Image 1 (cartoon, rainbow, N blue to C red):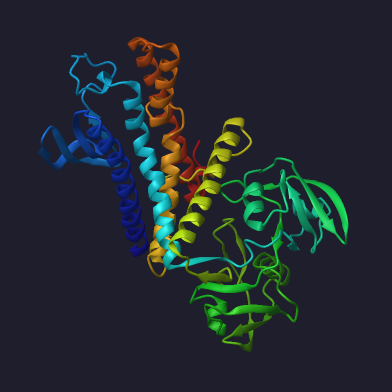
Image 2 (cartoon, rainbow, N blue to C red; image 1 turned 180 degrees about the vertical axis):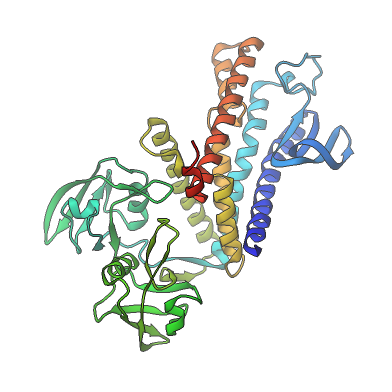
Length: 448
């Protein structure tokens, strides 16, 4: 129960901060350009508390699922008085600045937060920036069916030359059940291959079944499971299983399913000392995929490189990482519209809450700040999508009106906004349903 309240508090804190920053962008731009702001609200619905200063009512409302800034004359259906402080009395370039200021604040915040984190604590998995050399292949996987072998180096994938694992992994995840052309280097020979990543997990992301050569490091350990009872501790590095090297956590999991409940001998490295443990796996529920399998009871923790960057290096890296993430978000949107990827890949409020709870439970503030940065970037980009009601839709209509050299009729605008509202409600319902289906799969499958 404490984990639930931690997640609830963390997600409320993050989303509340995101909304505040976003709406402050609109508010500051409007004030700067001389537009009268009537309401600055965190949340929707009934006003719970607040205060009024000047023309503006600053309030906290009953439904903390968003927020808004209400400007005079903002609604096209309202009667215009010609007051120069009204939103529609201002030139289109003023309205453009006000519309884009909210998403821009979220993007600036994402860059700023990552910059600060990288200056204090910059860490990343050791394998992530290495060339994509296959360390292990899962039995029956798309990679095995395509004829790939351990030791193959992927030198081209989806048009990317000499990809690192950081570049390759997202391409595979965003290509479930879609052919992916690759070129491998094997023993000096170049070979062309096509794989079709399989949709896996409740989010239906793509998996090729290939894995980098990576040490298995014990992360969170369940005190009631065999690994902890045998004496294995967090931070231990698994170097052998039944006398054979362990190339990846997925290889270890597959081997456990083969040995079933037979005792397994693990050789681990702890403080530069080799130790041996005998562990008997048990059949227990796993999280992803949600099924019973033979387990010993710990989560894998990537071997990390840890350092800190100067201000210039941190800013450059933050901008670069946010650019890469933005491109992936837009690629996700494109493939969603094309029907090439499942809507289940989108995380809703429940998924965000789960991630926030996990980040809040980790040591230090950096995991929560990194998650906040990611959510802020997603919020900024989502609001820039050309959907009426959203900021991107306002910008699109302003662009169309600029080309037409006149305003779109109020009747047409009203119909556009009504259709957009219905679309967003249906989209929100779909996301929440998918959230519930991933969180409570057994219950949702019994629904008609």
